[in-house]
Amino acid sequence: MTIRVLLADDQALLRSAFRVLVDSEPDMQVVGEASDGAEAVALARRERADVVLMDIRMPGTDGLAATRLISADPSLAQVRVVILTTFEVDDYVVQSLRAGASGFLGKGSEPEELLSAIRIAAGGEALLSPTATKGLIARFLAQGGAVDDDRDPARSARLGALTVREREVLVQVAGGHSNDEIAERLEVSPLTVKTHVNRAMAKLGARDRAQLVVIAYESGLVRPRAD
Image 1: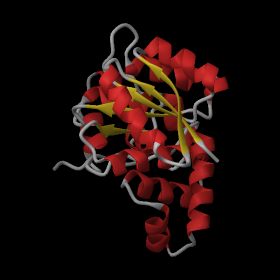
Image 2: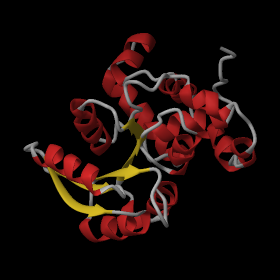
Image 3: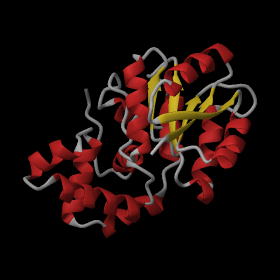
């Protein structure tokens, strides 16, 4: 199956470079280019993209607003957004994850990292970039202010619907562990872990693993470390 990729960046030169890279892969195809967030949302609807590589800062409708619009549209439930940013340690990145992005990647990442991120996002196993430390999201969520003010009490309450094992798996996901790593830690099969992850996502209304991580911290199930 060919992964349909949409490029959203206000720099034409970067879009051209990404297009050459993505189109060079036999399992990927660039289906559109957008120079701002509004255009990205329109193209996502029209082209039925699987993955949107979204620049966080664009004129007009920025990447954060566009990500929220895509995430809130039931007709775009299959679309995964990967945020591209010059600065990985950026509060906007975390806001994007909370708005529904599947993860983020620095623009300085190696080509293979970008291609891998696209495949991971398309497969629903969205994760953060390799250079983003496991405590990054926790650090931002621990800052308070808008993050705390924007909590979703209903989402926290839904934790009560999780089984004990689903909670255990959610804690491991929040730690940045893969299904194979979680399976080894909990002494179960990777397939069993995947089942628990999928059930937790359904119960918590999460689009993917990245949102599960955010929910785990926002709900208080996992606490940021002091270091």
